Length: 120
Image 1 (cartoon, rainbow, N blue to C red):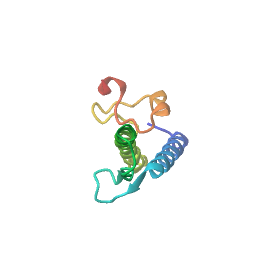
Image 2: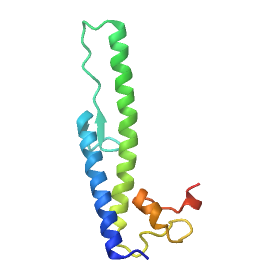
Image 3: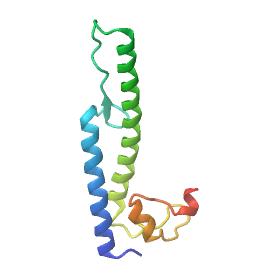
Image 4: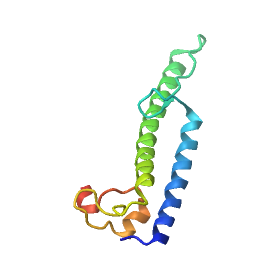
């Protein structure tokens, strides 16, 4: 079972990562409550004067950002879920086998919900 001081350390790591991800998402998305993850990458305005190469480059950038948006939103969900569970007795135990998740794993990934064996 995790000690209170360990939970506090993990809480701080989770909050810091949550804040960093939210800031990164705000840099290239708009918050859209109706969208799947709550954010939406904006397509750059279609300028009439763009040559086909520049237009293709803009579209490629959009799809890269869209992919990054999906990755960040997924990680944000994991973090928010961990923060909602951190005060429960089960936090720090594997959701599959119920064994204690090693401290070293939680330090690297405080949002880990499974032990290494169950994660594979």
